[in-house]
Amino acid sequence: MKMETGKRSGREDRGNSGLSLWFQAGFLLLLLVFWLFPQAVRAADMGDILPGETKSGSLTAPSFLDSWTFDGSTGDRVVITAVRTGGDNRPEIVLYPPGGGPAEAYTYDLSGSRLDHQLEQSGLYTIIVQDHNLDHSGTYNITLLKMPGTVSSPEDPDGGPIASGETHGGQMSVSDLDAFQFY
Image: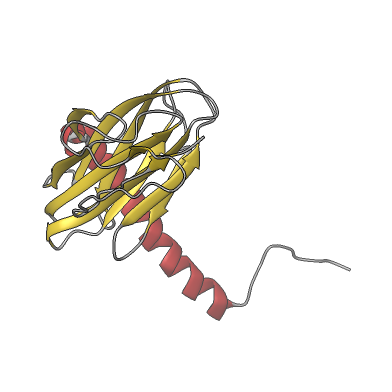
């Protein structure tokens, strides 16, 4: 008895192969674009962001992504927010470990992004803020909190130590996080 393996009915094969060809063609086109125009996929280097800071950024063509860096230590907990302040972008946050490699954490939310993550390594981390589809421009605010560590900055003095029974006031802006520490 002769058995044939690996064949499907003609109808299933035609339907899947057409879709598969589109994916393959799209992938090859992306590779070609990245090879011919490597600057198109580079993030704008926005520099350092310190714990407790809120900074502004702008997602624009050709990459629709920005990079920020901060120093972290194994076990630190970080909370990062990126919230649209103008345009039609939908910010996402991708966190890359020191030395590169696969993303350590990632988040996406239609109303803004918030990443809450415990760091797995020590060193210089890279935060990528990007538009969800990499095709919409606009402005955003990014905030970084790192615990243990500073939870306020000269530009945003809200937050910091608080004792039992104390009341503190403050102001919140887009993407702002105000954290208080007690012992």
